[in-house]
Length: 236
Ligand code: IPE
Ligand code: IPE
Ligand code: MG
Image (cartoon, rainbow, N blue to C red):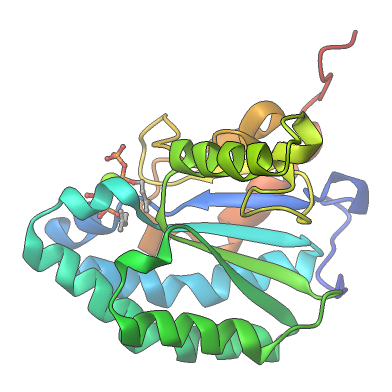
């Protein structure tokens, strides 16, 4: 685990094990520049590698990226097509760079929705690095927190194990570290169906910065803020 970037201001103990990022604000970023919304999504994708690299260098063990929600399918057809096309074109190059930096890439969400060639790309990416000890980049695609819980409950029931442990074993995040922090860019203060079960005791960090403008300096600010939070987990 690399931690060469660890500064005095961000002590090792304050590094969240698992950070979820709701990458919101691509559309507004583009509209502000009189560009089509798809240009905002392209800028958003470009921003993933630098921010995730920063997280990995600080020693964050897992980053979950909310890239496409189940509800996003209700957007106009041309925007949905542009998003699926972006996944088709950019997923492999983007993840290759992260895998080369020592990460393992996995996906959360209902992948059957995507065209066969996109599903094949996802499988290829997952098979590229199976190092179980690596830091993980978990990409949520066609993801719904509620659907994840229902699916997990069904699978747990099938095994006759409707207990917290039994259910957690069936979540997409099974085996990943506790979700310590959720970051949402773009100014909205809601979870929008992201990691609902896992968010039980997550810290929340909201920023008005639009996702394509969110950078490693602000990520570091978030880590500082995380270090100042007092987590009580119901105790005193
Ligand atoms: C987030 O940006 C990316 C996706 C939801 C795919 P938005 O597209 O929601 O951007 P805004 O919120 O409209 O600015
Ligand atoms: C959340 O953003 C989903 C992703 C970032 C992928 P949305 O833009 O879809 O959320 P709402 O619609 O503002 O709640
Ligand atoms: Mg949005």
